[in-house]
Image 1 (tube, rainbow, N blue to C red):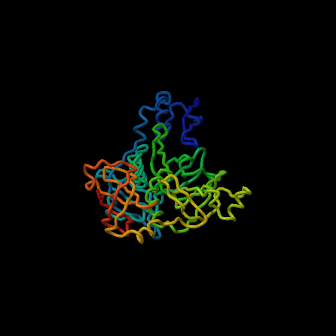
Image 2 (cartoon, helix red, strand yellow; image 1 turned 180 degrees about the horizontal axis):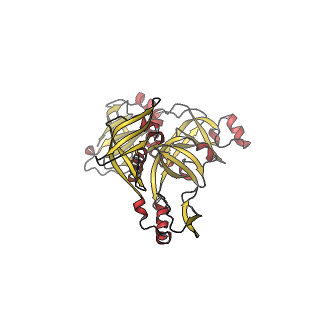
Image 3 (cartoon, one colour; image 1 turned 90 degrees about the vertical axis):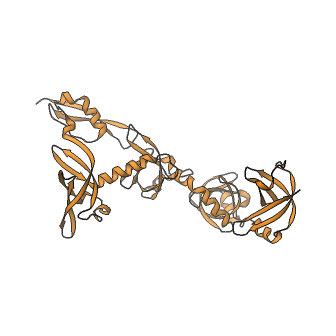
Length: 380
């Protein structure tokens, strides 16, 4: 028998790379493989290998089935006989199925299976059908901000990580594992976290996921909770330092700056001696929330809560002079004193020519203690 060598593409460790291997085959010998990218290459050499129709030997499809019986051995579910539409039946090897699936199986239960025919032998798997359903669900939610999946980082590879989501392996670039610069990529291996699907590589059949995108969705609610607990001391960790101060990450998705002047004496001494390192634990209070992306921190005490003083100073039916700071389609915002604002509904300012920066006379109509809101009416 004369032997030939066939070049076949196969997965490398990196999902965005390929490597070439040589497969030693005999003339007219069939090579059986279910990987689509390999089958595409083998099709080019089909005539050379002497196979008339390799798809008749290897085919896959998802089917509905019903469990007819379950074979037990020492209290362990070993296999299940599954009836497929009353036409075929096949045994599913439960020892190769995930435990969480096997534990739920009962006689009479309808299940989805992935059926594979290899040389006229029918092989079925419940776990593979579940994985297909999960993979399709993840794929259909690519780019949707409301869709996140719990998963686990399996291992690190060149440029990122392999991530498992309910048994489906996805790829996450290293740049998408966190919001800030990473100093130790290995520390994430083995961690469970939430991921959002962001893209898909059709060529490599790889779903790309991101933990960073998930963290971005948490920021608005985290800022809201931060305002409610503004006087609570927070513990975070250092992400980096500059000549201006120390950057810190905290509450899972927030980042802030402790300016050099707001460091406590001990930390300032370490700062001046360049002894503050990334991932160091550090405690602080919030000094000012300028925006979602700009939070100023301090180690010298909590931010002064202007609202607490306001509720003592302002009462319903009181009046005064304030400054318009914002005009929207819903109404206008008026600054009563530094850090304290009231709101005038648009229906109360009809046909009034008002501009940002104007001084106006106001009357307080309601003070909502729980939501920290002051409603106003304008006096003309």
